Length: 348
Ligand code: ADP
Image (tube, rainbow, N blue to C red; front, side, top):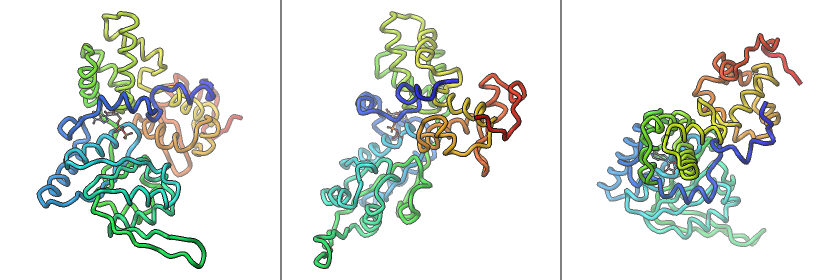
């Protein structure tokens, strides 16, 4: 079994973007809706929303984008700003640890600006309440002073568009969710869409890859453009270092080096499957027990690992916990009978 302690730092796929990677990603980001591959439903809905706002000369409604990391939420926020010719101001939930942080952010906002708050479900509760008022009435109440002498000052804000992104829309308080005029859920990408993503990125990187290599890369990218682009950069490295001329061979070799298996699972995905299979006899197992056994925080497991394994049909989630499917056992190359496990039995 994979040593869970090894998994966090060097898993190339399931991780969020680092600052350095954000810079590399900047060069590959689509600039308008027509360049944005896939997500046709959300794209059509956003297109209508933006055009209607333009015709009526008003700021677009507040927008909430949800879905696993790396599917294009930040990219869409940037496109919303670009398509409406507005400036984008970026922040994130963890950076807003109390209402004062949000007040500082909102008080600097210019008319019509787009404010992007990534991981909005991680914003402090006190800030959430301030945000309700800002979204609905374009004003905030700021408390000045302490104790009996404390007074509140009202600050009027110019109209703006909030774009919130979240990997856990269920974790957002209902009053906050309700104040978004539009909610779009981003789904994992189909293989042919990811082929388009990597083809476009390869062009931008001046890399000429045969179609078979693009398909191989796309089929092993966890349905996620960020991962497809990340793996593409590693294939480019491999080609440069080995002066490789066979793109398919280079792709397979790079993916092997980075521990991405034939189905696109990385080490963390496999650590999850193996733990569920071996330690919990295939389940049902609870999220917290699994996260302790794997040594990864439960939010990452729930928002990054599980959605993909569920989509692949390798696990299911029931009210009793997570269960490995026949396909999941098959992927590990083991059968419950082989190991003498009874479903539900827990091995310690
Ligand atoms: P998120 O905010 O959901 O984590 P990002 O918007 O940062 O994801 O996207 C990650 C990377 O994937 C970016 O480099 C972006 O260029 C690329 N990407 C995401 N969605 C698409 C898409 N639909 N078409 C092309 N590239 C995409």
